[in-house]
Length: 161
Image (tube, rainbow, N blue to C red; front, top):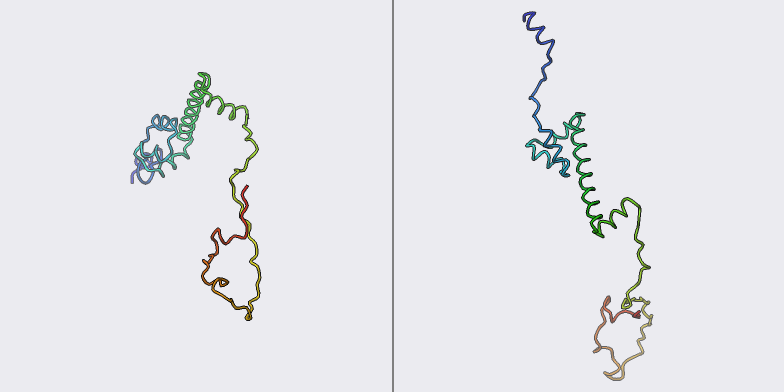
């Protein structure tokens, strides 16, 4: 290697690997102002999301993103302010809550009048008696419909309010 080529290399550092992808910073700022996510900005710039995130480490690029986001917030706030000044009551209430700390207090909670409260009671304990035999078919519970657990008929008591 000649002395001339060594001097040439020493003055200018060459980066190893692929050259950096050029990104249109003006477009990135506009998209950031519109509230686009990093994935959406990457798709519009035709680069990968990881490239965009890696570029965020660069102070100049990060400044472009932050400036775009700030412009978007200012623009949106201006539109909300204009809507509130024009008489939009919803915008006025929302801005009052956000900027002035105003709150709406809900009324006392009311329970619906047709609410049903089920009370469970222990089943009566009846000792089986081997002496008791029905004298007729009318006294027998054989033919009575069975009450299944979990059905309204099996509840011990039902109160309506």
